[in-house]
Image (cartoon, rainbow, N blue to C red; front, side, top):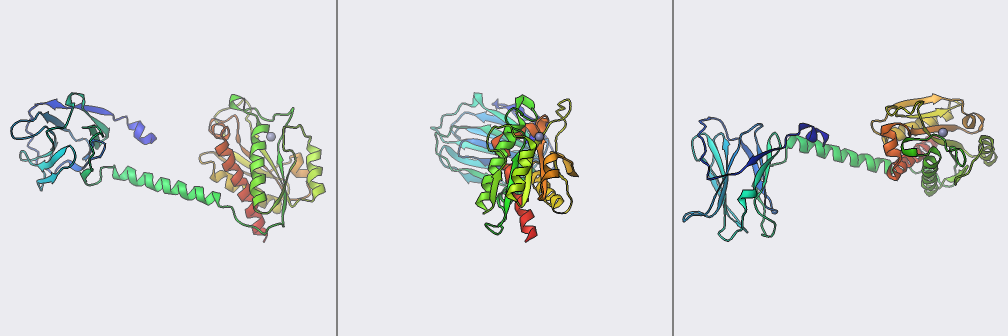
Length: 361
Ligand SMILES: [Zn+2]
């Protein structure tokens, strides 16, 4: 879409009334590549790039009904007539002069038209659109060829199926043996400690609590025993978080945080996951990092790192501390302020954890 906007190729071609065309003795194939008159009365054209079009309208006379036509450079190979329906009597593709192509739309007598308001809009270098009548007339579309810009269309389709695939992919959480594993999720900060304060006053403590609750729900549905170190806005010191996990003898401990950059630099974004002990702790961090990156396209991968944070250093079980983005970063903050993205992040963390367990067998 941005590519389309960047081109800013909106240009208009007003319809001339009774204007005579200048003869252009161009000997080349027709610049008209495809056309369609849609049920809503919009005519769309695809032409060769940078084609000069001329459009005309003529009131009905004894021979013809109201006619609208467009002349294109280049010669049409096969002149043809196509029977109309609804307000359209007939559509003709002709060769009014050597080296030219003319697309004529002839209307039925009773059709109400307001050609003075018509204008042909250039959608991009080779596509055009003009609204000829209102949808009050029932009309079955008529056309030849594919008007949509083929390249763009192909790309767009590819992209949408790609996104679709990715969405389904991450929504699909792997199964693990039920009632076997236990997890402690630790939403960072809370209560009088808001953690990082981001753009628009977004508080880390709130963001990570919402994400943690969703992770809890997702893992519980997979038959995992999940406990949160805090499930509301309470101030909880670090030692009780650790002793809580150690006393439960949980299989893993995952602390969820969001970052802030010094000086609140808006261009600093990214995700990172820490472990203290290598081996399983590192494996857990790696699984989580991989998944959160997948739902955060464009946000930098700051890596899986060794970190000496109290909660991952002092818990007995494999532990990871994940930073789900910078609340001070423009890109990350815009996403993290939305519940939809918090859900995606939660899915990703849950998936990382489930993959970790399925790896263990
Ligand atoms: Zn934090």
